[in-house]
Structure formats: C-alpha cells, structure tokens
Image (cartoon, rainbow, N blue to C red):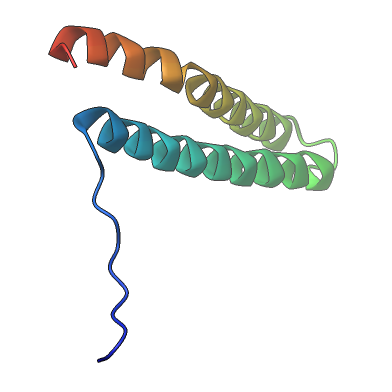
Amino acid sequence: MTAVSVLAAPASLNAVIDNLRNVIVGLLVALATLFLTVGGVRYILAGGDPGEVEAAKKTLRYAALGYGIAVLAPLLVSVLKGIVGS
C-alpha cells in the first residue's frame, strides 16, 4: 500500500471565497509594498529634480491606494456574499 497525499477540497462556497480573498489580499499587499519601495527609492534618488520628486510622490500615492484596497477587501467580500446569498 502506498501513501498518497490528497489536497483537501474546500467544504463550502464560503471557504472558497475566503481562500480567494486571502490570496488577493496577499497579492495586493505584496504589490503595494513593491510600489512603496520603488517610490521611496525614486524619492531618495530624485536629487531635487521636481519632475522626479512628483513621479515618486505619485508612486507612493499608488502604494497607499493599494494598501487601502487591501484593507477594504474583507468588506467587499462580505458585500459580495450578501449579494450572492451564501
């Protein structure tokens, strides 16, 4: 007899939605952190150039927007659950 590892199937639609939410939030946070890092490096390396400073600030705004969306993701999922009815 051989041992076979089987991935457990989600128990319900709620479990699938929660797992999907967790993956999406993780990706959003990772992407926002990348934008935050790039924006910070651009700001440091701008050297006083107003165009580069503005581009760096815009990148930092996008990072903040990404973090905001990641924070609101559970709320959006609960609204979707209410619409779907699960």
